[in-house]
Image (cartoon, rainbow, N blue to C red; front, side, top):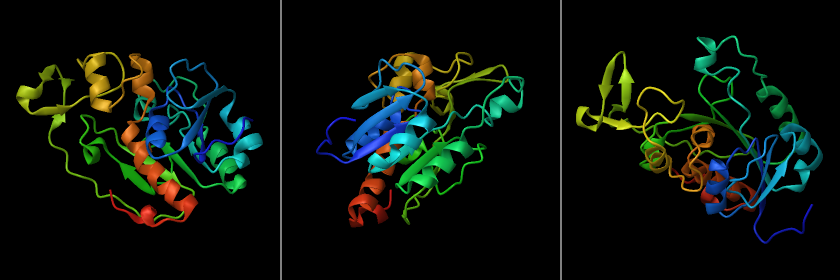
Length: 234
């Protein structure tokens, strides 16, 4: 491990390209990302290629806080239907066991239907983004902040049942996943998510908007430092 930086240290597990990491940086964290795959465009401060759960078990106690985004394919909606034959491990349970054993404040994030505890739900509309992208956060620290779910302004851009819906039809949001359905260009996805450091569709599709990481990061920082910010509303 390197010398301790001036900023509090956050461990970003299953980091992918670092959508969460960029938000945590904006909240004041020094972020170390861990992923089993190479991530040449990772947005955090340090990247480590390793098994995320094994790395957390060995080094997690050295960090001030932890964020984890275990792969969501095991229980996501797509894999209940046409992709149900694919073999995806369920890493939420094993990740939770390690995080609970460390005694370090943490946030674990995943998609609706994943089985994760729904302590906080974040939506792109809460931050004025052009995605809804609902994500649940299971919090391993105390915070009473529960942002209200803002009403959506319209429908999603793209093809639905043989009919295309665009801005002229009142469609507002981009569906940042997959390649079909007229979901938008890479530039539109970048703008919708608030991400500018990668132009790879897969990386954009796997990311959460940095605004989510910043919101959680503000409250994690408040919990670690004992400031009142942890109770701020969205």
